[in-house]
Image (tube, rainbow, N blue to C red; front, side, top):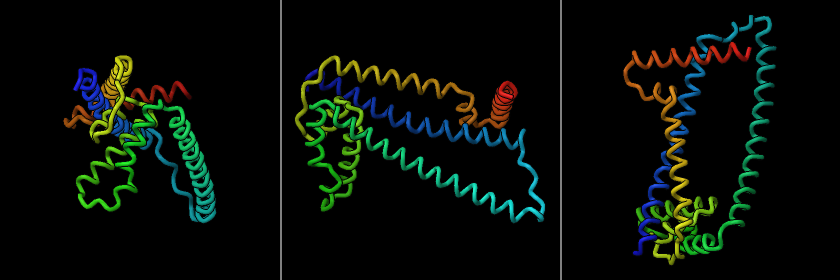
Length: 219
């Protein structure tokens, strides 16, 4: 294995791991933020008292109608977003590097879910499914390094990887590390992972004070 291929393997492994870490970190951050916002609202802006019996039924109907309308709106937005994602994905695939598309076709000939129907070995089937998903992601992102890494694992011939392409992967790694650093430096992140209940409460109070200050500025 020549130097560039060794470096490609190293960078592809690191990039793949960091992308997975970033996905999980974003999910944790957004969930923790939503939890803090919910506690903040319950503390400073509690819900209005329940309506009296005279207007309860009418209110319930109005509420149901509003919720139904909102649900229809959400479903429509989801459909529109899915259509947009499909168009964006198709456009990305069309604009992908010819070498990326060429490798993907060879990978798909081995790993496409339709090709795995009769495969008895569960471990091999799961591994190939995972490799296919990584290849699809590489195609959508036009990432020749990640695609070449998958191809190499399957014994598919790969093109010569240039220094410029390796530098681009290094830039992606640096960018992801920066975002991870920003997420992990937030008070919400520290609050979520702090085990000490006293320290956890202190961080929450700091968050509430900052949020209340922002609310007053907006008001």
